[in-house]
Image 1 (cartoon, chains in turn yellow, green):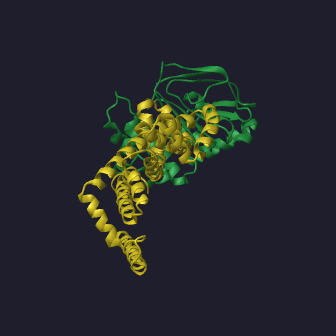
Image 2 (cartoon, chains in turn brown, purple):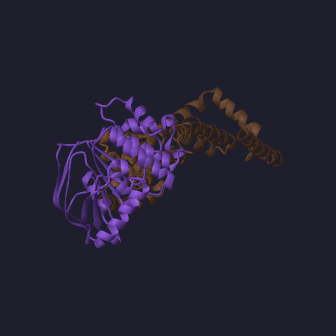
Image 3 (cartoon, chains in turn blue, yellow):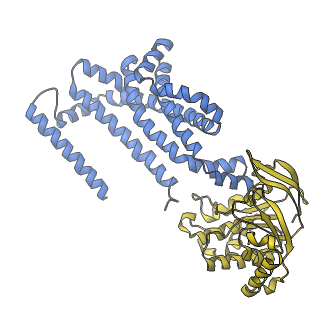
Length: 246
Length: 237
């Protein structure tokens, strides 16, 4: 409760500060919070905001799921097999260092301006990150507990479910969190460069019209949504899985 | 229950020879203590017997085909994210009634912590849970690797008595590794002394005291008798 009150206070101060500066400047380049709220409401009512938000969310969900599934399996594999890891670590270093913009442009050039290219480009940007995180998690697996599982003949299913997964879970959560933060930023760039709908496209449109209120309204709606995913999905998962901690 | 026959077993870790030409026969239902200094390869032997490691030379075999093995490790090795009950039930195979874990926890004197997570328990309690887990699988062979190390003396004494009563209620073959001769005398039928680098058997003796007469004084007098009677054992005691 106390925490919630502090958050509310911090948010109010930020809004007040913004309102004051906007009031002093009286420029269309920094609209007041009220103005942004009005624009947001208008876009909500005419259905554009929900539509573009929905499209972006779908791309986000697709690329997120794909990178988590493939990245987790690859990470576990590399964490277990030293020889594979030595080979692929160079690839990983390169992949981690490719600028997002480059991979996005290349995907569009190679696969065309389509949905597959868009989602694949986001996936490419996220997956090395997941692999590295899960590889680290796999390397940290407790050998003592693995031996216990072996001498008590737990078998593969019980070993994975009760011994390995609980140890990897914090790493999966870290990958999911940083993933969400990274992916939603990249999705916008992907949309800006090659799609005709979604938040990125819409922001681009407002940018060309110099409509800062529109840009802010869309951004705030999106930030709020991503934060809700964190509160409503990731945080409860964390609490449920870590209840054994002292 | 099962017997064990170890035949000229050797083990190298890289260039280091850990065990050399080890021959040992352990009879069905026997409680054998392997006594030797820390780091002499006793744990490696248990690792090999429990199937976690492989011998470099020689072989070993069990009298019973595919015996059920319970292991008590130096550290309790409980899953911290599972409750005590879950930790115990997890290792049972389908043939064993899951209700029996409550029975075992009662016998180790901790019937009230079934739903607790191991992190909330003291080391002594965790050790007793690990003991209950090893007994709960109804083992033919129990391998114990210094299971009482780093416990305070009264707690260790209590757990030794507990171990003996559990063993008496359900006899099976035990290989108990320790560096503590007094502990070994109190618990075992037979003492196998091993020396270090590489590990080999120095002496193999029956404990000449009946189970009822192993008071601290009797144990102490046996220790000094061993020291004077076997000069080669002195550095190991």
